[in-house]
Length: 607
Image (cartoon, rainbow, N blue to C red; front, top):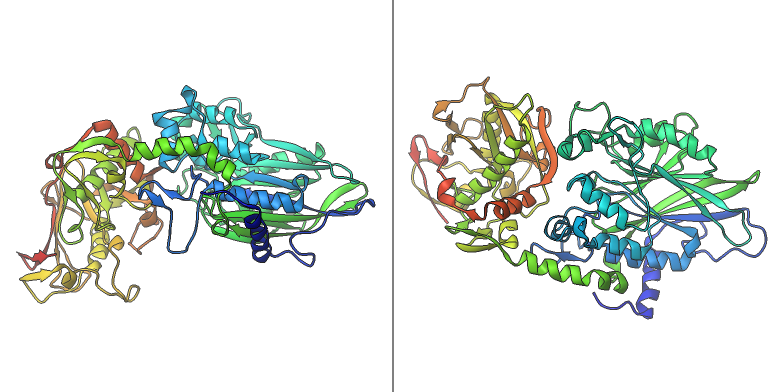
């Protein structure tokens, strides 16, 4: 997190040049001559889905962030890229936007929502960072609503730039409750003023995911519908260029099924169906889309889309090449590319502004939030029932049960699935820290609830049981002799994260896994509360978004009715549970509900 010296900045500019692709003139063009200008380039720089990441830091591991792709994260690194681009292009030729999901996702964000909340006067670290960078505007993201409207309004007040949301409207008035758009007027030497309209849109899934926070207060209309209303009005008000910051993915889809009339991911539909849009900064889907063109069906014009991954890993650079036609500027051509945060150091000013908050949060995540009456380890969870997995299933099932209260699914038995994907996870007896709890759940999955029949539960467990190698009969086996079975799709062995353990909340779901027979007929004695599960029996399953979206190829999950989806991170739910309860008491929830057998004989598995 050191200083950015002049020689490093020069290197940064060279790196940006190498990483960018702009037709003909190269990335960094000289300022125009003093002659009257009829062609120029406007650059839109964009971030999205920052999710409370300022530094290249993993709070759960208490070390620098690292992943297998070599990515770096954080708005402090994005700031260096943005600063370099402004220096090379000229600050008046650059517009800086964000496409939402800013104030949720890390302990840093959580701390200033719940522990030292900004509603009480604290300054949000993301507001400090974004103000230092001088964003021009940002769109609302769905996660902006996670902590309630009071927190969101406090964050909005702390920003020096507008927070846009054209399709977030009053419950009864139908009028936008956030600014729908802004008109930014840019004056360059020897040119006419350029008027750029910037429209903000958010995925309408907020109505489902944060129903408790928005019902009766805010409704969410479709992106196409609201853009169709506002883009002509922006043009009539003088916008020569229209850019949309849309927290809605580029691939048309919805995780909430048919619960709303509007698709969750609709950025490409806006480009296709709404005339007058020049470019869209895309967010929400956590995808890396350097450049995509969508043809508008009404005008035949190409609309530019770009999505810069997430967490500040990338910065979008959209180059809009303008021509002066009959006294007005028009976008002639457009190109986009992404800049990689792992090529630069953190911006020292942004890093220093948030240093105090960062240090507070480091103390928080390494401080006790509760106690545990007995140590829990996940080391053997892949081959025997453990309290560690039961704890995850308990928290997930409780959250889903509370979430379906008052719905048609209320009263159905709630089951939950969890995978033993961290063999090193352990919660000690005695004091428990945030990091201890987070170690049980090392992925950023969110929680859903789906409705399954008894037949689907059995089919799901049969797929899970593919994880085990077949054994000849009863006996004692090592863990490696029975786990991580190779398959056609996983010839190197089925990974631990594709083995799911299922448990019941208010009553036990019990079953045997007979690994002396081939996959497909291994689940025996499946019962709920001691009664055999019938094919038609109905259950609600607490499940993570990775699995529900098809990860692992489990049957039935992608088409099952979704009865709960508030996009709450499972890891944070675990932390919140311990903080609220104060004590984890494994004997109160742990029971042996499943076992490995050969025929009717339990197997003995050694580490």
